[in-house]
Structure formats: structure tokens, C-alpha cells
Image (cartoon, rainbow, N blue to C red; front, side, top):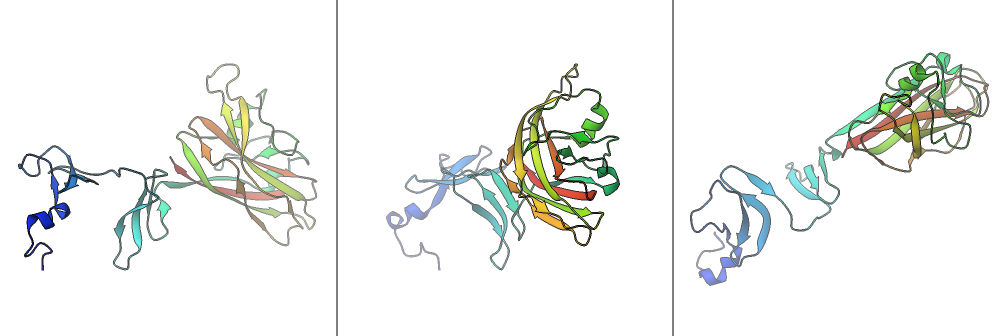
Length: 260
């Protein structure tokens, strides 16, 4: 039975949704849907368009559910995110990879931060970027552009880092204490004499030292994100450091991120 049955308009008009369109109905111009007393809704409608725009942001607006009541598509208007699926993942989630084999990392020396190749590009010589607790915050290319550029992840859009994990495996019975960083830098892209130089380095993610006991087992670490947002035009490096050279290491790092 309709909730309006047997009731006077004065008792139900606030529950009637309508467009203020001079009694001409739905037209081609999108208009906000209001109730009978003039209160506005987050819904806008025409015979061609539909728009949802809340008057104030909320944490999550669920748009589509399955029959079991599970959210399939949600819009997080506070953080400007769209999530989908049972797992409610960001719809533009992507992954980037840095990796190196032990035969190549055999050229690494101890107590130095070395940048790993990005997405399978193998440099001829190692790219070292500092010997402190963290990698250096700047780097000037001299005669090693061919090696340095193999390690660059040049970020083309604004992104947010969601998760960083890495695996390592030693090639000898005695391992070393190891440490990794995910770093962000400004990069000179002007094609001049300072092209490719790095500056203003920031730690994006790091983790506690891992004491590797040797090739009897592999080691895994989820790194702690220190600074999640990276703007377009930056360079990201993944670096590795060991305190000695008892072993050479194969390293596989994965970065989960989404566009923003």
C-alpha cells in the first residue's frame, strides 16, 4: 500500500521528491532533486544526465551492493577515492617492481646504498648513492648516466604509495645485515649539463635491519611508509645496503600504489 493512500497532501508533501522546473517535468537541463519543503538531496537529474554530489563529504558513500549486502562499488568523497570489488580496492591500483640477481649484486660493496634496477633494466655498473644511515638526498651524474637511468622510476602522474614489500635471498651459508629504502627525488629533466641529477631526497618507506643468516632461507619484509604521496615528475629509487659481503643477494621488491 502506498504511504500516501488516504492522506492529505499537507501530511505527505515533505516526502515527495521533485525537480523545481515550473511543472514541466524532467528536462534536458540537470536539476537538483528536492523534497516538498525545499530541502535538497545529493541527487541531480535530467533526461540525459545523473549526478550525485553530497552537500558535505562523508567517509564512504556505497553505490552498489550485491544481493548479500556486500559493497561492490563505493565512493570515498572525503579522500576522493573509488573502490570496487569484495576486497574494496582502489580501482586504479597498480604495481611497480625493482629487482636484481645475485650475480649482478656481486659488484656491491659493504656499507653503501645501491639503487636496484627498475622493471628489469640491468645497469652495467652499480649505482651507489651514499653510505650513511639513509641514502644521500642528492646525486650528480658524472660518467655514469647509463647506469643511473636503469634505476629510475620516473613518476608521470600524482600517486599514493599503499604498500612496499621486498624479498631477499643470499647465495652463501653466511649472510649479512641488510637494509632497504624507497626514496623520492626531484630530477633535472631539462636535457642540459645537469640532466638526470637528483636533489631533495625524501624517504618514502623503510624498515628495520634484517639479519640474514645465509642461503638456507629467504627473507621478507613489509616496509613502513613514511611519506605516501608522490607528485608527478619525481624519481623513485629502491636501495639496498649490507654491512658486509659474506653473501651476494637476489632481491625482489614490489610497490603497490594508486593514481590520485
